[in-house]
Image (tube, rainbow, N blue to C red):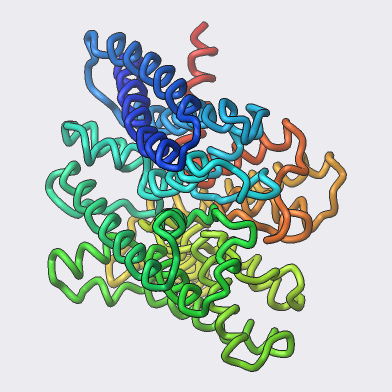
Length: 482
């Protein structure tokens, strides 16, 4: 294991985080709040990052796939460990474990919160909380590759470990160019949403923080009632449409916008995703229409909540805990599915569901006609056995981690609905669940160990399990050598 290159990458990530903390510092000073929580955090982060860069730059060597996976996992751990400090220093969340849960929820774009109410929290802290969604949405290492010089070999291993989805595609000959192009699209879409929200009457602060949460599909709000506080059909539609848009594979945006090809519009995953959103919206609206003033209002609330849950954003305009069983069950299924691969959304991804269904159908055909040759394809291209095997193993690991976490968390004694949806919402990076952790509740009910377990679930969900397991495998290998 090349530890120096890992240390060097971690140092650069912390240096970038220190630079990002200047934004909430400026917001705090703009609103007349104390900037010391951010000043102290920046100082500590820079000191740690600078020391690691100095240590890691000596005889760095090359980055292999194993180091890439370990670097990505540790980067998310380190950026969260230091990113939690403003919450503690400001007194917004005095307990460090709770603060760590909050910022991991932010960077992984989960949106699960321990804060019972947010409107009394300092603006600078709220901005940092929402800004973490924007940073984590496209990936911490992808951001680093977009702004710092890295060679293509290093970039390839980092991008493979951090970009979500069963199939990693290279959009451009240069990996750094890929990262920059993705970020250009990401930033432009976010700015367009900000402008549209300003037209809807939101303040610049509310428009920015809402757009950060939408872009990263995170869901941290700056109002106690989330998006429902604005009570605006226009805002609901704008945020709902952009949630769906950020749940689309960014590779398709590149193909359509940059390469000017309509090939991206033929994606099976895209149409499957849009079909699920449409069907869930219509059926839930019909199921809840008796609770609202007509079908149009029911469609408004149904579309927003379906968009929020399927993209794992977590914004809310209604207390869906009070919806009928069918609607709540549908939302739980959407939690498990999630958005498209290569998007900022979480969940197991639509592409994996498509591959799973095609694999099952292929096995059935093989049983019926043993001599037939069955090939699993996606968008007309044959998938190799490694991609299919990766999908099957991922689903098995997801199930094992979900059941194991559910069993451990059940020791705290809360009802099964609260416990199960807490695990699923964190493992799928959604935010709100059902029961006590529904849209009007929060995750403060869990003990310190419970929050650490759920924090691990959030990291496993965002990094899609394998990079985290690589870290543990490296640790066991070191122990074995001793």
